[in-house]
Length: 156
Image 1 (cartoon, one colour):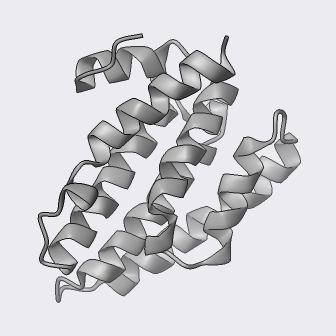
Image 2 (cartoon, one colour; image 1 turned 30 degrees about the horizontal axis):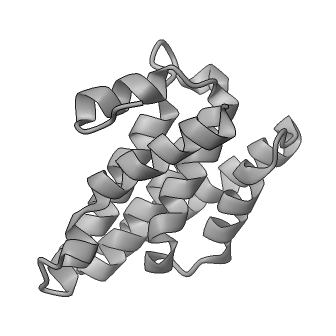
């Protein structure tokens, strides 16, 4: 599958089931998890890698992550603390990944929402480190590659 831009990326993501989107979104989060050391982030990545996490597990962790997203938002403050903002976006990506189906509305593309939040976390890291390093700057390309691999291996 060809994924070279966001239009192709979003189209590929929208063709996945919710469980597949969660699993893939977990890989996006894992890519930036170092920006938020809270153990809940690692729990999200571990849980969505399960083939079929229980709805009770998902609901419980979703509520915890939702609280973490609020906590990290208030920690950001107005001083442009880019490290705190990056941590917040990782928490928000995790929240998007675990969003209950009934809260998704017509747009079931939770992997897309997660991808955008992880890119924001990456951007904050880039600003915080005052770097335009290729390793940091190319989160979108990294997501395209992760998605191609996921589709070619997981879904084959």
